[in-house]
Image (cartoon, rainbow, N blue to C red; front, side, top):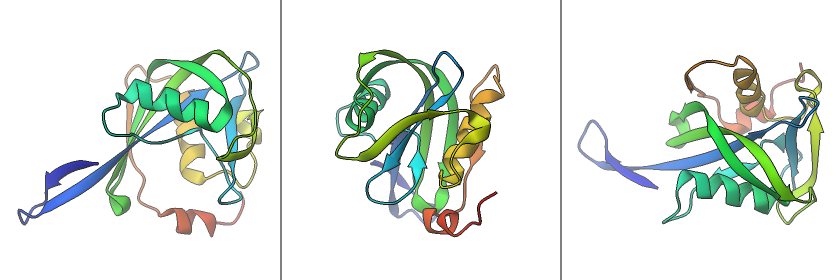
Length: 156
C-alpha cells in the first residue's frame, strides 16, 4: 500500500497491483481461471512489501500459472479510484516452468484475443485489447466499475 494525503489533508492508502500479458507463438493470450470466483483473468495481483514491480509480476505469474517469466515492457497504467488501486500491466516472456493449475487458479490456458471466454473479467479484456494497439507509450486509462458491477454485465 502507498500512503498519500487526500484533498482534505487526511491520509489515504493506495494498493498497487501488477498483471502480466503473456502471448504464445500463435498470438494467444494466457488467462487463469480463478478458484475464488468463476472468472478468467490475467495472472497478477498486489505487490508485497519490499518487492519491485518486476519481482511482483514474476512472483504472481509463478504462483498463479507455474511459469517463470521476465518482464519486457510496461503496457498500461490503470487507475481504479473506487478501490484506491493503481494497476500496472506488463508484456512478459516465458523463460521456463510448466503451465499448471495452482492454489489460486483452477486452470490456465491460452486463448485467441477475439475468443476469450465470456466470463473473462471485463477490465482484463480491456487490458488485452489495449496491448494489441501496440502503442509507442504506455496507455493511461481509468477503470471505474467495481468487480461486482463487472460480474453483473451480460456476456457480449
